[in-house]
Amino acid sequence: MPPYLGLAIPLLPGAEEARPFVVTPDGNTDNGRSSRGHNGDGPRTLARANTNTTSRRNNNPPAPRNVGHSPLLTVVSANVRGLRSNIADLSHNFVLRQKADIVAVSETWMSDTVDPSFGKIKGYTKWVRKDRIGRTGGGVAVCFKNGLQTQELSVDLPQQMEALFFRIVLTDNSGLLLCVLYRPPRQGRFSLDFLAEEMDNLLQRHGCKNVLIVGDLNFHLEQQAYNNLVTVSGLTNHVTFQTHERGGLLDPVLSDLPEERILCQQLDKVGSSDHHAVLTKIQLHVAREKAAPRTIWLWEQASWRDMRGALTATDWQTVLTGDAEEMTNALTSILATLQDRHVPHRTYLAKATNPQWFGFRCQIAAEAKYAAWRRYKQRPSQHNLAMHRAACKRMTDTSKWARKHWEQDLRRKLTGPGVGDKTWWTLVKERQGVMRQESVPPVTRQDGTTASSSDDKAALLAKLFAEKMHVESPTRPPPVLPRETAHTITSIPITTELVEKALGQLDAGKATGPDGISPGAETMCQGTFGFRPGRSTSDLLLLLSQEWQDTLDEGLDTLVVALDIAGLMTECGMRVF
Image (cartoon, rainbow, N blue to C red; front, side, top):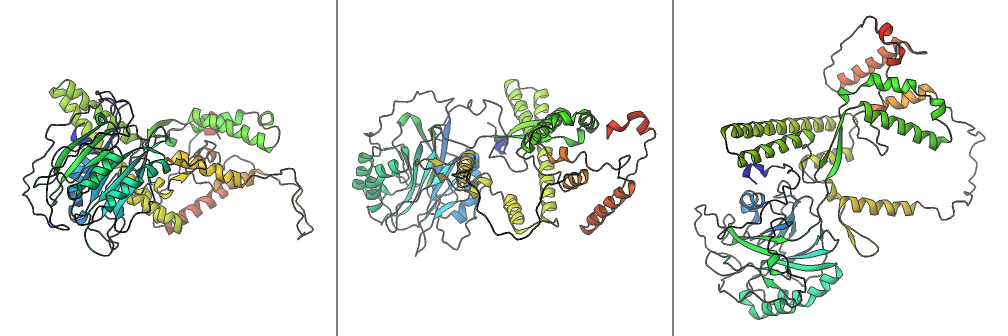
């Protein structure tokens, strides 16, 4: 993938799987940074240790060596030695450039005085942090790419142990246990002993098959405890290169996955840190938020005359039979069919990682840009180069247009007369890039499994609420309540005026409801005044006067265009209405 595809641009089908699993031998980018001294928790004795220990617990069959078409989980881990001072370099030169799924950092040097939303990377969740309490230094933090299904685990840790635990959901609903740990040089061995003693319990309790441990362990100072951890838990350190500028391996990547499934690569140092970042690529089928289908209705191109004609020609006496439920279903079916037939629409898949403004036009432009790039790479020529540059310009212009319209729509909603506290904060979070699925944490089912995706959480909550509303004895008569009045309702009359009033209160800009019918289609018959019994142009003038007054109150401009089409009734007749 070229560097310019760093934007949220969807790939053509199969493009993600076709990327080869290639890592350069050195993997080091020299940007001219000078070496910096170490000023951490204390002096370190840098020494290489025997880091590769054969896994005893790993009974998984070996994976094939050709992993070019296999899904990958990309992890960037680094000792940043100050997240606030190095967040810019970490974001642009490591996270976004490597397209990391998981970003794990140690020695963040943060405290509870730092806002929880600090350093949020575009396209990623907020940082989950464990800051050091009582004194400066230390700390770990993790963030995940949007769409990756994860669950933060609550683990009773020993005091002063700086670690975070997560469950990475796999496609078979099992999990990968992720542990991000920072062990200061003078802390002792209790954190390593805790992992050795509790690893199997954590795996079993949270339904995880395998484990991945990253961070700065300083294990060369507690070699015996480290050897005991990797031996008892069946772990292998996949980092075989130096991770500190003065030599030594301080930032291991431990896992009980087969060795051929994991490949680690040395990256450059992050900002002012004296540690090299580590890029880890794991051949693993992780669960991600599925792309949801979205339908764009082109109302300005709708054939309203044909739709009205079809509604007028419908024999409603034959269609609307039975009880209220049956008549409602019949009406819904007819409206949905006419909407699909007479309103042009386009359906596309919206990825969870796409920005809010990234719609259908952006996706078409992005796919055209990627296709032009593939064409130019296969057949380098001046013509294909010009086509690729033109596609890049169209993508840029389309993105600017989409972002501008999205911001204008948000501004209109925020300044509208009917915005409440809940709507206002929802729009503000949407503008800040907070994803909707972040508001509902993973939910645990009765069988102990976890619902992490949006669809699974929605289905589980719907089932729970449906059970709460279930009546055990539906034939049991309701309780007799004291009568407050002598009047009773014998019938509910439904008139044309009441229906038109209800249709007039609909917001045509709202999304399609569960019945699949857009409010724009429901309101298309409302608002015709001429040549109708009980209606006149006076009603239209009163309605328009009210709309103009509301527009003036909002500080907007009003433009009126009056048309007098000669022979309209003679040529078209009443069926057009």
